[in-house]
Length: 221
Image (cartoon, rainbow, N blue to C red; front, side, top):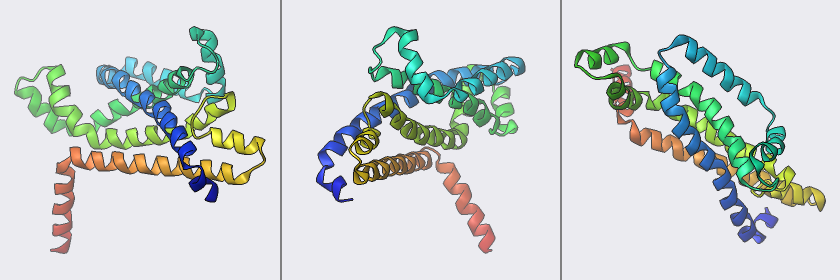
């Protein structure tokens, strides 16, 4: 802990890089997965193929992907974009599964009512289904965010920045305090973002709080 406080500026610099490498892929993954997941949801065979491809993509070893991407894309090995691209693949693979599952959680009666009111498929998805699917979707986004924060540290093995640098530097110097500082920093960062996304989800879905409150009142009665 002493090393962490004595070198707080260094840790803060690594944290900024870590956040960039973690959150940009999450955002890009959402931009890709939401429209794709919405489109494939009701076409069974397309959904099955897409989810199979996503499952295969997620099983690829992260370190192997970090090393392979520069040769495929033509980037320098130490370019941070390699980590961004790799984690975008993982984020999209997880989220493209989560979006249809979140949409499936919307009650059929609500979807049927929107359809009876003349909503087109696109309008129904945007105005009705996606907002009501937020509780399930945000729960999955929390998993992806924490996964990305963890996986960024693997990039330090090939020399790309982030809090994982504390592991490699501490190991090279045989200095356990620095390694321990890296572990604490990454766990703390993951917990902070998980809590922030949880609170964001609560803010965006006020009806879930109302239903919880009603259930508690009934239980007391």
